[in-house]
Picture (cartoon, rainbow, N blue to C red):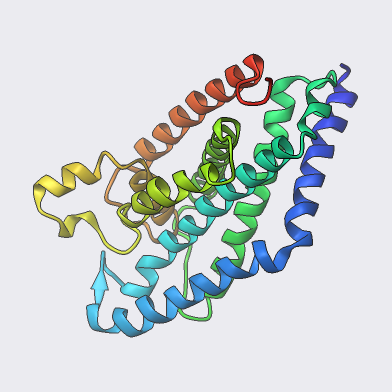
Length: 257
């Protein structure tokens, strides 16, 4: 395929994905905004006023980067897993499989669509947080890189989950039993410095901890881990998941019977 044809195929997938989640914005964009607003009110204002400072900042400012990242992670993942599995379920994925579009273009299109929703939700949550606290950006490149790469990583994860899923229940198992616990234990609401030594070590095995802290460093300038280590780990995971996803597409895992 020519470069123009490749771009046309890529942009068609992305535009379709964006139109899909914006058309049902009341189901895709509004609920995360309402949920995060409740977090700001309950954890930030009501509980945060009793906790005081954390990491040298008031509690509301401390949790905002973690809540933004949590919204980005869940939305990026959810968009791709639901969209691609729906294509499988409706058998419309066969149109892509018989087309001359390369697998990497298909993967890039779905991942970009998931990132569009994840980053859009992240922007909405960030704007909502300004009604509760003031944010100053400490390191803009670190902040942008971390949120973009994290969104891409979990969009890839959603794509793999969708390929392996055989029924609708399968696409909710990972978000419920893996993503949610890892996110809540990933330093969103606390600094791991508060934990005993053993549990600090356990927390370091949680990949989401690095993403949350990398983003927090970009905004506040504080982090429980080295922010450059965070970026390195995200890049490693992206490379690994992208390789797995492409191999699965080549073999038709879960989509060719």
